[in-house]
Amino acid sequence: MILELLNIDCLGQPLRLEASMAGWQVLYWGGQPVAGKNADGNAEGDFNLSFQLTDGRTGETIPCELRFSLGWQPFHFDYQLKIADELLTDGERTVKDIERQQPVVEPKVPRQFSMVGLLSLGMKLLKSAKVIKVVLAGASLAAYSWLFSLEFALSLIACLVVHEYGHIRAMQHFGMKTKGIYLIPFMGGLALGDAKINTRWQDVVISLMGPFFGLGMSLLALIAYWVTGNIFFAGIAAFNSLLNLFNLLPILPLDGGHVLKSISFSMNSIAGLLLCGAGAGLGVLISYSFGLALLGFLLLIGTGEIFFEWKQRHQSHLLPLDRYGQIVSAIWYVVTVAGFCAVMIYLAGTGDDLLALPLKILNS
Image (tube, rainbow, N blue to C red; front, side):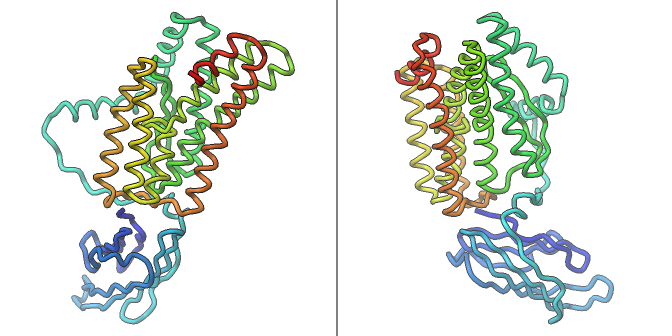
């Protein structure tokens, strides 16, 4: 894992420190490496990187020294920068600082025309065209109304919007710019952000806040059913629970798959590969049992993501979850799943065949 730990001004140029959990460290000044150490397994403790800089005005060589204390789980980083044996600056960085930083992105080399590049361009146009949101929303409403009814279509879209809005709010909590919500016919919804995450905790929160908002909607619909006795609200609570529970399956690229990936790859890479592979195996079993071609397609995407994560495990820029974060993430996931199951079990006990249908699907 490679992470940007520090980026400060030093003699008019950015001084940037990157490090990995394998012990690799590189210190850049003005974009050029000036000091560092190899991946020797020594990744935590007190470190001292000495280097020399040249004053652009006088040509004088200036001795410099960066001292820092680093811990990964839990994360802490304290530093002191000395120039010519005089303290220039010091400070500390926390997980909150890492979450909100904008890592330096190396300039991309122009590539020749390819289908991948064409698809990438198409996605960029999709993300930047606000009118597409309205078109896709209208197409979704028309498609679901044609298959079912207008009332069901409006209810389904409301469930999707609430779910995706949970993802949007989580992104905004971390100071990330968002592109908004896109409703895609027969595919559900998509919340797009305009910035990359820096920590596994961000991945967990953004992934779980969608279903968490969905759970809130199911509970509100259940309360409305108790107050009014209108079975329409009970139907929303039941089918919204099933929809969100499906999204919590531990399969990439579903929300549950992202949670599993973040927890497992924070333990170690082998556990991540085995657990995510087990999740994919579960998905294969489900898709085979129900003949779900769409789920099979998602599994192909998720399996590719697992393999990519495995291949890039030493180059990932994501700060892993500490032990506390792993436990909190797992409990949050289990409680959310249990909440949806409780709603479905309660409504199935009312004796209405339609309200019992989501639980029958789950049991089968």
